[in-house]
Amino acid sequence: MGWSIGFDVKWHRDIGYGVPAFCDHPRCHATIDRGLSCVCGNDPYGGERGCGLYFCGAHLAGARSLCSRCRNRRPPFAAKPDHPEWIQHKATDPSWAKWRAGHPEFASEYSVTREASGR
Ligand SMILES: [Zn+2]
Ligand SMILES: [Zn+2]
Image 1 (cartoon, rainbow, N blue to C red):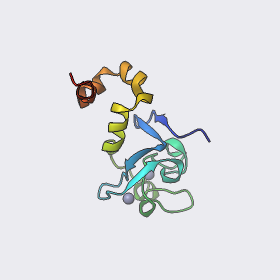
Image 2: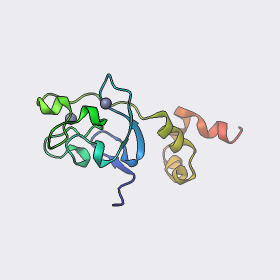
Image 3: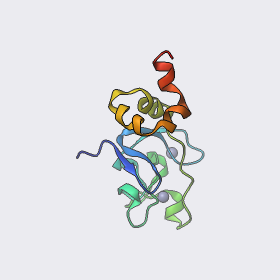
Image 4: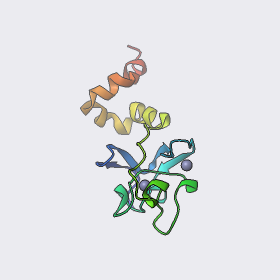
């Protein structure tokens, strides 16, 4: 499908089944991935009815896989920060080197590149 990693322009975060993440339900700590099977609304960005946030199986329901907020037509939950595993991957993996070069604020925020190079 070629959708392992993409960028969600609506929520400004990385999405795709290659991206580990926490379920976006505020009281849930399940680790999921941001693939199609976990997105509210069954579509990247949420389609017509969904918010486009990502949830574990316990927090999506109905034919369109909607979260509780969208099922009740209420404003979406707040998006959670990225999973530490994913931040670590972006900060250290060679496949993200080019991206990091274009986002120095990320490198300084997590100060991982400095540590990795031994200063
Ligand atoms: Zn939703
Ligand atoms: Zn959940």
